[in-house]
Image 1 (cartoon, chains in turn red, blue):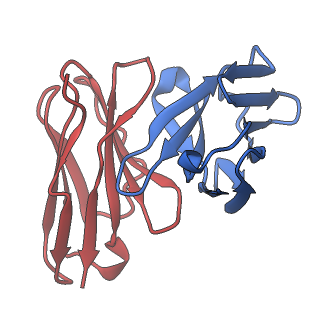
Image 2 (cartoon, rainbow over the protein chains, first blue to last red):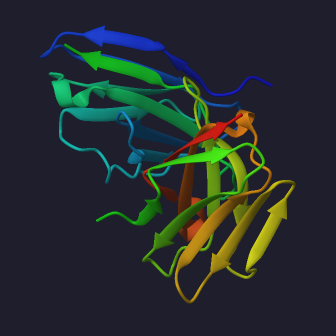
Length: 113
Length: 112
């Protein structure tokens, strides 16, 4: 079946604008993760959704970042008042709860000018 | 605090050589250690993984060596090929895979 789909693939925005990134996980995957990957660096955990449980937001870097998930489907990551340091690739991954592997999308490359 | 430390940052290997990437962790609660491979413009994909109850796992040309007492694990790529050129990430997870911690990545370049 289809893999994890992320949109847009690229986003250029001006500093101070809000952006919304979308993730469509694999159907049936109840666990969903957002990671940030700065240029040449590793994956930084942002947030984790597991079914109807309260999300683990411990990785969100500031209150400008928020994420929502509708049931066990689409998730959106919103960054308000974007800053240049928010420029990165934002990766979404999904999995069956308590199982591996993580299936990653191809990411959204965000550039804040 | 970085949960998983990875080295080297970059690696150049001749075709046919052995590529070795190392990772270390601190949290003894981790019980699952995967390696992911990432090509430019793509998301990471699972390559191979190991549990701490074994010291080595081999899949084709890829081998994970695990040293529980030292809290270290490594990826060995035998007979490295130009097609293996990618960025490799180690990771660790515990608590029923509720959270994965990734290393900083190693960019591997296999010269033909």
